[in-house]
Length: 490
Ligand SMILES: *Cc1c(COP(=O)(O)O)cnc(C)c1O
Image (tube, rainbow, N blue to C red; front, top):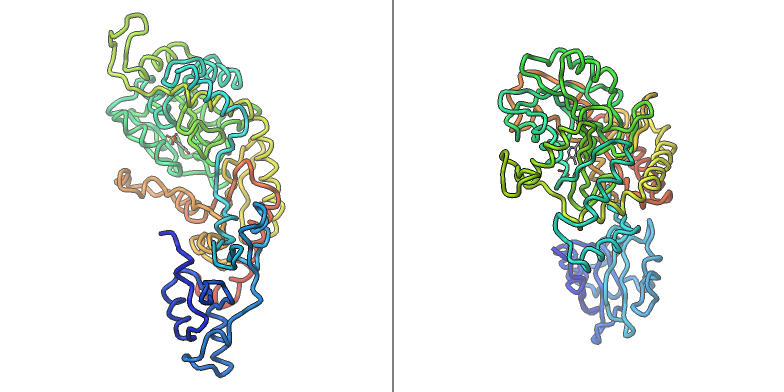
């Protein structure tokens, strides 16, 4: 519900009691005292009323005797942005008055300085290419940008085939279906990932079999895969979580030994490298997502890459209703409509043109975060294993609640009050309703899931904003480290 500051106006002839009544009913702690012409003469907060009463005031006393007259305000006549500049860490709310001195708006630090976990940056050729689609009438899934985006994605990965799809989940579903994964089969999936990884397996009629994660890189633990393999196992799906690659060599070795396919879920890791090789090019198929919060975006969108011509051919048919590529309206199999539109591909192509810039900026943001956070006690920085080049999709850390003196979830709330959005890690898959019934425990996944928190990580974040996040985190942690708080922690 949008707050209307006009509800917080009272006549300066009103009493302190009336001030308290308005404050009590309002989501914000400020009252504006106005004259007969509605001009703001002064303001009062809870604290001002408290001070008045401590100084001997009566609730029936006129508020104007105690109101603050020299308050800071913005003006509607100020040039754009001027009023925002008055907001800072101490002046967190600001009335904006019109020429007459009436209340026009009430602006808040957190409204304007809200840092989301992730937002897209669309400052390249996105607009020009989309306009081209509209001007030329090619807005559906035919049109030149689909092919151009696919070609440029394949060439970035130095791989034969890249095939767009409607989103990352359908990319995974296409990949698994093309491999012939079906009812009765099993696919090995890490216990800690976004549910779409496992959902895609279920959509094939197969069963995801979970494996615990490695505590150092938060990805599937290769040493625990063997034990999960059965006669029904058909594939392994390593997920490069939060942009850090899995330890692929042992995974590929296990796959070779048991004759299993490897489908990489690279939704969060476009541009990440394992021993110098781009993720997605190491297994049989690599799947990507272009949801708005991923490394590059098309709004919604996905991609499958592969070197195998038969798999490419199968995916082309599957994503287009199972229709023969030679004979129109002749359906060789039950397919899907998982096509990407020309509009999405136009955005994707423009985004991919900027990939090097996106990746190097992400790296420098991650470095700036780590520099600020590395000496804080109770904090584990994002993984950076020797064979890995991470893209730090979301800058993510683990916190030790005992050492930092505040629970992960309270920390998320406290940062939110400072205008900083963060998010907790995914829940372990085996604990959620669709995947219950695995009578195994995955202790590392449970622990990392409960301790993980991701910070604002947009490409357009400034170093000053990274410092603001780090400063607030430090402040909250230091403040919570009073003995009482630590004692009350579980
Ligand atoms: C985002 C994501 C997906 C799914 O991608 P969508 O485009 O949202 O369908 C799959 N796996 C992982 C690990 C993801 O982060």
